[in-house]
Image (cartoon, rainbow over all chains, first blue to last red; front, side):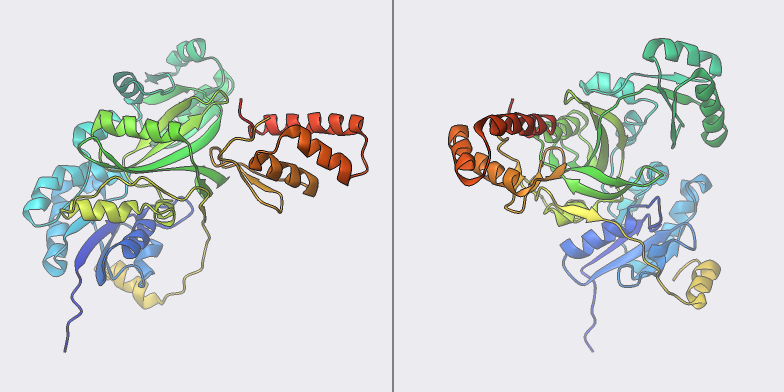
Length: 350
Length: 80
């Protein structure tokens, strides 16, 4: 009997296709569209109810992996176990919090025959929101002014420097717009209790919110750049619908970022374009965004291009994409059996 | 009054600005004017056609034309 042996076996994290979605399911769809078949996709999950675990038309097999807080040794042990069974050729991690571990394990994974395509730790740290202002100054990129603070007393200097409203941001996630000192103090306490210190206070920039998905080859070349404007935003600030844009200024901005940093891998630039047309970089996410499947829809399949480069192919930078391509996310009740839930809960694999 | 080159228009009156992602709906006569502007017709000849085809005075047309131009400027659809 003929064996249907996969050409590639790729492991992907971020299977939580929920209201604040991880990018994994979108990455897998793009890989299935853009890579030769048969393709075997291994899901790597953290929680038992990540929807991607149960989507068997997309994910062939899922294994739970330890949370980043458990350390890289535990992650490595688990990956060694999975790799013995699956012979993985590439891992695409999709969460900010897990990237540090995967970047650190990169050389070890390589010795196991597993490729990754990730930024260096220096690149990863430099674009961290705590360092973003200095990052902008260093590379000549327009970013909002900010102050890193450790006490509410320092809020007065922020208000003096930036005026109201102030954007008070947590170390990892969340941002609150404060119109008074009282609101700023409340935001400080709320965010520091949730995410720890320090707190970032940023100058408020008004304008149109635009996101750019980009893929760098690690040598300063932008392989793909797709700008998108959010058309429908959830109460968590996530894009529920978006449209591809044509704007040379945005493409140039992303190219400058890639050239300056020699970024390797996927990333998302969060941009605020002011009424005068100045694009401010508000944040740089060091991985593909959850709307990454739009890049495949627009003609530049970034996850597939990343996989090909990681596996040794040379990819020429894309030049064209379809402007006005829209994605509209939707929710869908996927029906499964308790046996499946029991399997992933009890045995850590499905 | 020049429509930006990349602005997409349709006969049904749908207008799409690919730089901003904004879209608009134009009524039939506005759609007709936009299509002619897109084809590069001179403003004077567009106005002449409107005066021939519709029951409107020259003064009223000028007033409406100015109003329409201001809307296009506000929507960032014209070249500076």
